[in-house]
Length: 334
Image (tube, rainbow, N blue to C red; front, side):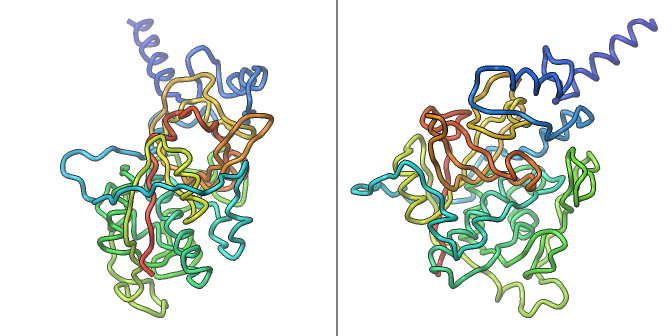
């Protein structure tokens, strides 16, 4: 009976550790395997073995809608006569829009669907206004008040539906004291010792929706709202996606995350090993070519200590992880 109990405990521990995929003793072994392989990217420790399967999967909060949709899409634009350059970086194209260089942190909340969307909305508002509207739209408002899933996960197109239907107030990062509704879930460190406290390895509940601004903010919740005018989506139409980014700014993409991706540090990511960890939403800002490999330049929302200072590159042109199949974008109402 004692042997059976021990066996069951071992099975539970193995099944519960996302960071030690089958065939690997631990994260270090996985990283060593990737870095010794003849591949296009390098790994480094972003999460350690102490993080549970449930916790890490919870960061990837994409949940496809069930039942009636809470958004209405317009036809996606079809572009012609636009030369697509070999590389494009919006931070160079629109240097006046500081949000393009910002890396947010969703904290211990499955809010990637909200953060990637709000980040793209913020960028596009600045771009469309030619830098006149430097407003950081609120991730808090989207997570707490949209009704699209909160920290339990949601769908980027639903985020755009809320933006068009109800609008978003301003709001900065956690503890920034900026805007009507700054984010209330703490930024945290998943592995390294840094300026943020360590993540507590359990998930925060969805913040309570508040139809008011923080004390001291000069404005009301309703008067602070900014609205979207339309939303649309692309599926495996890379040239139109590139033209849309060049014209309007970043887009939101959904892709399948595998266990090896969690430890990405540099290079152009291509899936090498490990099981599916979840569906994740991110912001595509540009593209380029590295060592002969075409890539998308992408912003994550796991703070600047993850990956390559919060960014990653992923192979372009072969729908790596499905990243080219579900792309959402929209336009602001000026």
